[in-house]
Image (cartoon, rainbow, N blue to C red; front, top):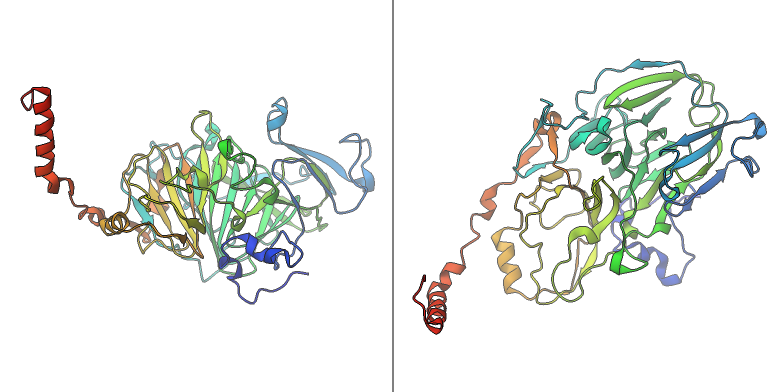
Length: 490
């Protein structure tokens, strides 16, 4: 039985999941003690699960008669002839197939959501300015569920092009009641920031708390309950790709997000002969169909196209143990490839508690300009390297090749003092949604009263230290010219 946490922030105060194992003094456990569900572990495995033992047919997928009169239904997520290592599918054995519905009708446009991020769309904006948003407000009145509370911040491309991405926030205060959702455009990586997400899927249940993420893939039906009421988080949506673990390269076999720490649901069915609404997102537009039975009537299933969750406190940080910062790719939890093999469509990175011990090294992030678009959020705690206005539930954004780095005071302190042996990002987890593609900003985010700009005055006092050495430099140059037998400038 799950335990109620005496401190709801208990898991936010650990340095790493390993602390929960008490140095082997207690039996190990894979989920937080207040998580009510069971899971199967692994990443990109082929799984199977039966709520009633003996349901899944053996030796074939679609027999003439499935046990208990169930229907066999296949969900195919890739081309039928896709290579085996990327072929995605699942077989579901259910009381009524998904085809049993009463047709589709249009839903009103959600003016706060967006899918077309091409600059020809007048509802999106391009800007090189470093932008940020204070935490978005969760509605306090009325009933707003997970889908109704969807707001889009930024993105690139268009789902009909089958390559692109979008970043959303969700701001909700009530459960989805007799209402399910299916995203026909792409995969959703959901980041819980405030409040628990109790997610029911066709494959079973996922309990996702702040500090955990869930991935619901294209075409998979789900609904979200919010037992804490006030709930907020982020979504990274990708089109034309699936999330995968980044390659480890010279790290070898272990590190970063380990495959066995990804958890998949076990079958749990619901037989209800009641009116249900299924909301479909297609091409960024919303539609609905109705049916007179629960969409979660799957008694058993098998396959490798299955939703999953991951606890970010299990991430195994790696880094330099001698000198200099390593590129932020070492913080990558999941990546989604693009058609360009040298540049991912999207990376999901986290900055979580870790030791910092490099010597003779400038400790803060070095001043840099890079090709990637970077959108950051803070799940909990405080994050150094951003302004005091970077708060849990907020957002910070920088487009490609815009210069960024810390203010002079931090540069000066880091240059003058030896870097200490220290724990950084203690009691905090921040994330970055990064892409090789340029982002445009939606009307909703652009016009939000939460938006503010990084004030470039913070870098005004980056003094020109070089000019203080003018006499020494001139002397050295003169000596060099003299040795070569040349006059200065010739």
